Image 1: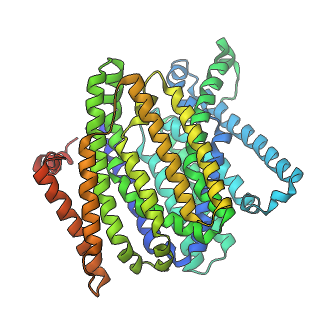
Image 2 (image 1 turned 90 degrees about the horizontal axis):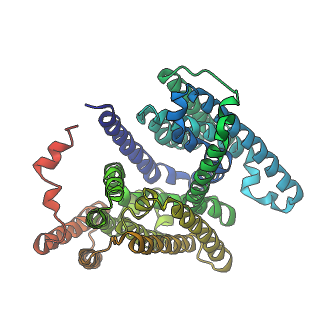
Image 3 (image 1 turned 135 degrees about the vertical axis):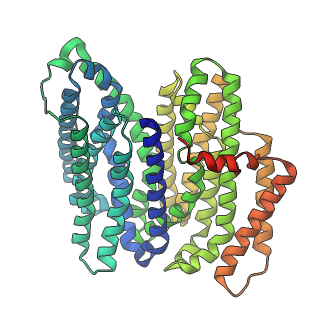
Length: 492
């Protein structure tokens, strides 16, 4: 088995394990104290949202310029200077942070200010970790970094929550454990990088001054920074704004619903790693008809599987909430499930729109639309929070609107540039079947047992969808769920 195959298989296993750990914790453990979980879900997304400012794309430069620097025997120099650059950025960011609150003391009521002693160190630790993580990928090693990046944050959340709620440890000490897990992951990054190639600090600037390499690094890092900050803001700002404008309890409810809905995205896990080389090859060779065919096929696959999972979630959610502590709060927020779920399904239907753009010569356009998404999300969230009484339902509406606009822009761009289009008539058939199955399942009589309802209604949905699909031949399920497919899972 090749290094890439082994690493890819192990990476997927860790990814699925992390996904299950986070989701099970969110459904069965965190609901015991929505407020404290809401605080934890405020801290990390807020740190992640500010993280790109400190990293400033230097982590990406450690991939882009690594091989050339390695040929010149200066890859350690590039790593050392990147870490110094991150530290200096953090110092500047911290100075500006405190100056802002000094000159505008009215903003000291923000949770960001109150939690600064936890959020600021977390940003620094995560920034160093981001550089090491990208640096390690140059050695075709992605499994260990995935443990630090995927599992450790979930263990930090679960551990801090368990210490606080189940063991009665103080909130401050629980936060200490939370931060400690990230520090431990940074130490792990360092020692693992050292095993791949002994780290020898080299802070000389002679190499990057040669032929003005530093200008290329800064230019590339700047584009990485723009794309990264747009991405982080767009997908982390919800938790931040709920924590600031509503309360941590609402933030906990919203985060648990997101965890439940993340089941919809299971089909997407790992599929990009398979599709990226194909997309890259077809674009490079100008085979846009083949790209269009592949794009439609993968989009239909993602949409069909996502729609099936979402249909089961919709009919089973009311009964699942009865098994969750404080489930009544989740029932009251049920519209969030419908709104965000529909936006996610449309996102799946558009397939790898963004990846097609990023792998083409128009990759800079991805940065533009990502910044558009970030700004639109912030503005809509603010309007719904301040001008309406919708609460987290308004946040869900804002996210759904901005994500849908984001995908529509990418669809139009890809069609105008490459003549590829992800949506097909088969998706309409799937939508009609799923809608019919959901409505019939909701109208079916309920039993006195929540467990029976939770099992039989989603099961009925599956029977209707797969039965109709078998008759209408919409999606070739037999090509995926057969003996050959299951055997392939164990072949590398």
